[in-house]
Image 1 (cartoon, rainbow, N blue to C red):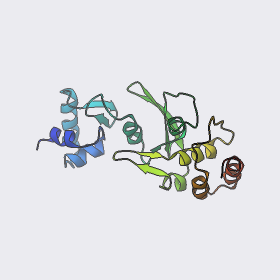
Image 2: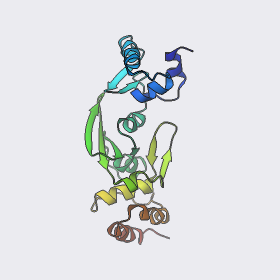
Image 3: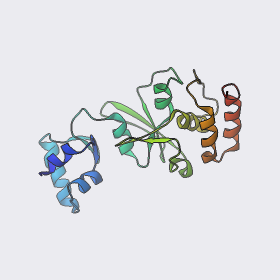
Image 4: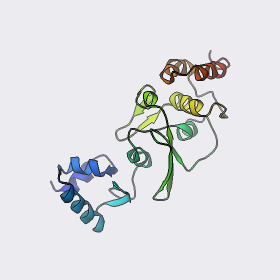
Length: 189
């Protein structure tokens, strides 16, 4: 099987240089870079950013977002909007990471928000899809409350507050637990 076929049989749509080295079983940096350069030049790969490539322009945006910095997962306004907790539309993809940074790649905007390691590395409330991870509505709700205590939410009905009360301990933050209790007292049945 040739090396491009290996890429196209992969379920991934976005690849880092490290991914390509593993898929192509290439451990020599110079040879790897030469292969990448060749396939980008011949349009078999699309260069999205330094060290990040796609099979074509029809890549998964969340996969790209979580490939930029690792570890990371989709969270905050992106999840809250998708689950109907906030109504505002954002073109930006919001990502939990160990960096705070805004980036624009291939006409897409990404906002990385830093969470402390003990929160970021804890998988509670994180849904692992095949090629990216995304916070549950409850985890995204807690992530945003943790960083932005006075955030306004349009609709808290989709939140499962008993799940939030289970997850809040990973933040090790008494103020967050108190805020959650205040929000939850009106919604817990």
